[in-house]
Image 1 (spheres, one colour):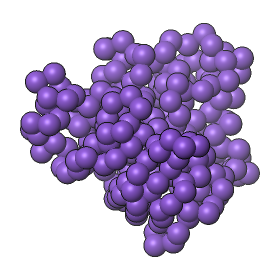
Image 2 (cartoon, rainbow, N blue to C red):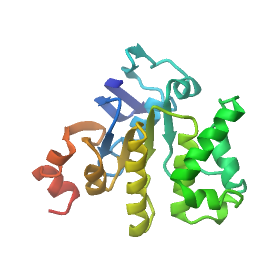
Image 3 (cartoon, helix red, strand yellow):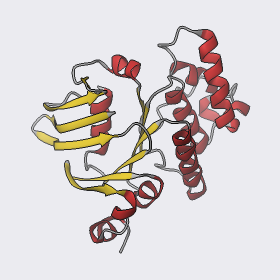
Length: 234
């Protein structure tokens, strides 16, 4: 469904991504792992249209979307849940989720989608009238994911969804990723926690200093000597 070919991104004279190629199928979970500064977030921002590559191509459903603006890519079914959640703290949970549906003018459709999300995230439904600033880190992450899902994406991109969360909440985020997958939505998950990301994904890519070092079935990458040494403490 989504194919990124030879993507190159620079910040001034500094290369952030160098000839990176990644494919995302119509379903399943794809993990992008690597150390801090490897270029993982830059890759997602480039796919979402928030960062302009200097070279490469982004193709979705056979059409080149490299020149499309972020909202046009959203209309194609690409949704990004950014690192750090980026909620509006003085807005309620409901209002934050509503922001994610700003392109949707169909009130009935929005309500149906919202009810479905409340069923997936019952804790968010309970707190829908609370300010986002009053939520725990795990609850804020749920709201951020729900905000991205309200647009009915075909591909959900999660940028460091477990960052700063307690171990118990990390497992809850993993459960949510599996739930989203069951809804038929493809997930691209950027994570420093390589073990977690590869355990819940089908296919993985390993970035190091802006370059693609390894790729393959996640179960195979978990057995890779390089992955074990570099990321799993082996």
